[in-house]
Length: 171
Image (tube, rainbow, N blue to C red; front, side, top):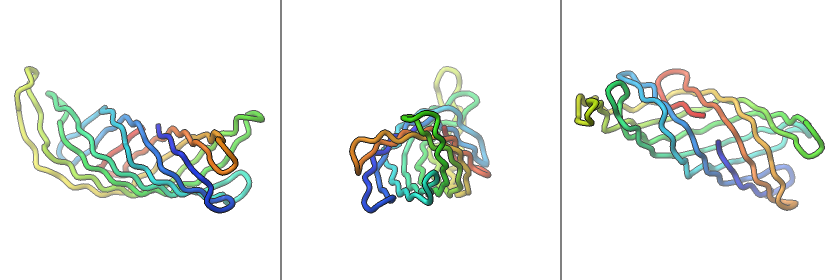
């Protein structure tokens, strides 16, 4: 889930900065990590209306997070960067509630370091080599714009992101 504060710079074009809170998982060539939550403090957005009920957007995000290792999941530090482009269509559910539903594609790069598993008592079991993964990713999302003023709105979004091969996925 992410929250973005956007300001219209020119008619029907907006730019913004966002913060995300994500439930993450990593698929890697050697071992996976599941279910870490992280705050993603750096999202930059560009949105442009294509028609009355349609818009496209581009997003750049960067985050660093840590997975805790255990007997079956690899603990690791992850440095993650992504660039996405999406298309959204607006649906009028009621007069005041008009959510956007969308999908898109993007690319990601992740550096996986300090990779390890631990015994059930918490001591180090095994170490794994660092990896760098770059892959395409696809996503679906739903968002809603809360209008704060004529030129400013708060966008809240729920998004599911999945890499096409090894990489970082989240929702």
